[in-house]
Amino acid sequence: VDIGVEEIRFKETPSGHKPFFKHAGLAAELDWESESHGTQSFVELFPWLYHSLEWGKLCVIDEVDSAVHPMVIEEILR
Image 1 (spheres, rainbow, N blue to C red):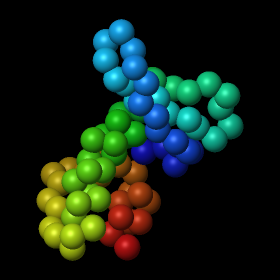
Image 2: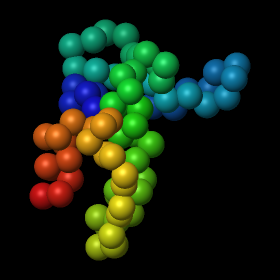
Image 3: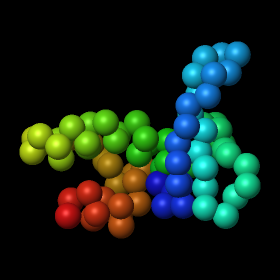
């Protein structure tokens, strides 16, 4: 996951709502397809992680380290 992402906004496009990412140091936003595999994976995992952390529940994710940076995993576990 790119730690330079400052904001995620959803915009209406001809094919439906799509996320756009504002990065530190970049003037233009990047669309979903332009984001790295790690950022896409983290965005998809985030609702599950948030729910687990908010409610103190167990969240089992197979091979999370294949898409999310180990430093980010360390922060989640902390």
